[in-house]
Amino acid sequence: MIKNLKQSFFQVFAVTSVWITLLLTIFFNGQTIALSYLWNLIGISTISALLFGVIYSGLWNYLTLKPISNILISSILNIVGGLTAVWLFSSEMFYLIAPWIPGMVILSIILHTITFYLYAKMDAKKKAKELNDLVKNKIN
Image (cartoon, rainbow, N blue to C red; front, side, top):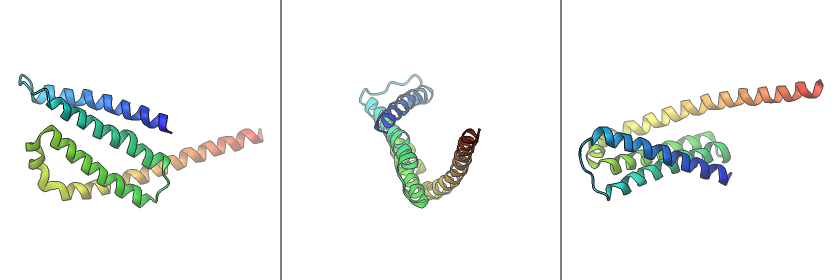
């Protein structure tokens, strides 16, 4: 489990670093940025890696909490992590979107709920197929 979470962390960290570099190239093209701003990029990549590479994976694949707990924890952490990443990227952008935070929280909970139930349904079908295949193989 730890090995999978480490691998997932570094994969998400690397992809996010490339993604943020691409965004900087698009939005700050031709502008110079302070070398200290690289720490903000590392912070954004770390937040994303912890959130999507470790917390989500651990929460949905390894922990056995009630669905409502998973949904609330992942929704709240997603909003906090996302807003922190936006603030690290640009404080002006953060203050521009700040009035919509309550709507973001509601939308996050709704989308996490829908995603959870779709994922659970798909996972149940996959496991049922695997069990049926096992039963068929034992009979034959």
